[in-house]
Image (tube, helix red, strand yellow):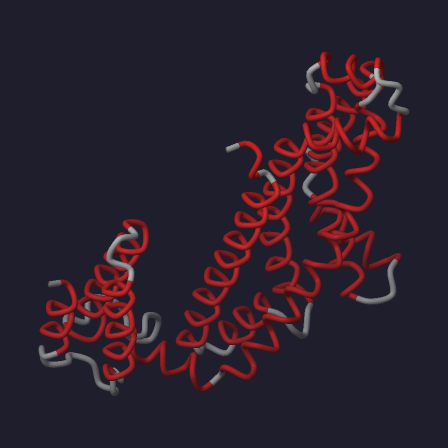
Length: 287
């Protein structure tokens, strides 16, 4: 019914001057309809398709059909989709540039924060002190370190990696320390009675027990990292998704600006979904 409603919406006369390129939006709607038919038993997929159809209908009515929004700022969906296709090579390059920065800073932060949190949290006294320190340092927005990074580091890319590292390190460290400190003592007592050494206890008992808290910190760090990455790219980068949005908004090309905004949302959603799948796989024992 929504697919039919969208098709009927596109039969209305346009009230904008330029071409709305409705064909591209209709093709997307047909793909969504096919996904809904194939995924009949998955309620989440059907709900997402429902939302997409509702968005396309409202978007089409508000732009090309009723001209309620300024055409200069808000392009109709078909025009935005067409621009996606025309710019796909540049978009792929910007995506890989942004993901490369995220991956560098994020992996370095995980490699530093998780082992450090394990050893600090194993001592109750050190864990409490480190928790207070990390709360104070994590309350400082990492973006304020950009001027120092520009002064001390050779390239903007290294500055971006530093900012992402700081955005990820403290949440992951706090989550790791909390997970270690709240490990049930009976597990540690059993390991001690069985003669397990400190390193074996940490990595075979404490680490699996702390993984849920560690993933909580990882998700928090990932969320903040994407916000800071796009902000940093809009300030001084020459590549990346944030740069794409800022460059074309400065030129007054708001069709490409909308492409960049939707692109950031799609990429971040895909990354979150991948991390969620990984978390579900690693923590499958919780089920």
